Length: 250
Ligand code: HPA
Image (cartoon, rainbow, N blue to C red; front, side, top):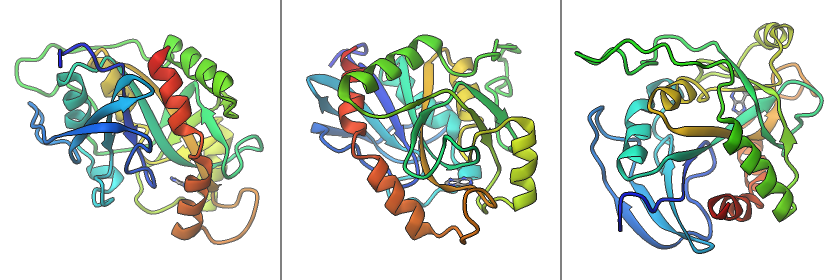
């Protein structure tokens, strides 16, 4: 295998620990200049293309959002030659278009996280980078995701603002009301610093958000349970392998 034949790298979020349909899988336990990623990188073939997969929280969901080694995860994917990263992020829906089981490709984000290593600039000897982040997701990759969804008949909402919270607890209703006032449509715990680090690393990066529940106080007043989250992610994820296959080809 050459360094350049990874067509696409996929980072799976809560409820997505394997990429269904990935064939002839080779498992790599990698170490990077930032330490170890959350788990093994699995490289296989999907619809004729080489695709790499990494579970952001580890394959047994043992790493909480604020302790994910985002730098190591992205560096590991870069080290195997990936240049395009599709981030799967399980989220809550805040605004009307983003109800449970919706798939969305957000185009903006707001970062509410704190205390996470959010830049490469802290490395001794590294240059201070002020990367452009006005559009946090790579435009062309977003266009390709939307095209892949259209060609595979997977319903996907184009756009939306992802609010990244600290977690691991879910938000209060007042926090969600504030996020709504700020312009957020979706809420998740892992969108940052991942997107910013990807930009600093020069990786093409975009998010495919999987809506698992209504955010606190939105849509319904029911308590949010992990069972609901996982059941909705499983149901909403059915079209993802086909979409990823089409994206890797495109
Ligand atoms: N809030 C934050 N993160 C989430 C949620 C939520 O409601 N659902 C799934 N991930």
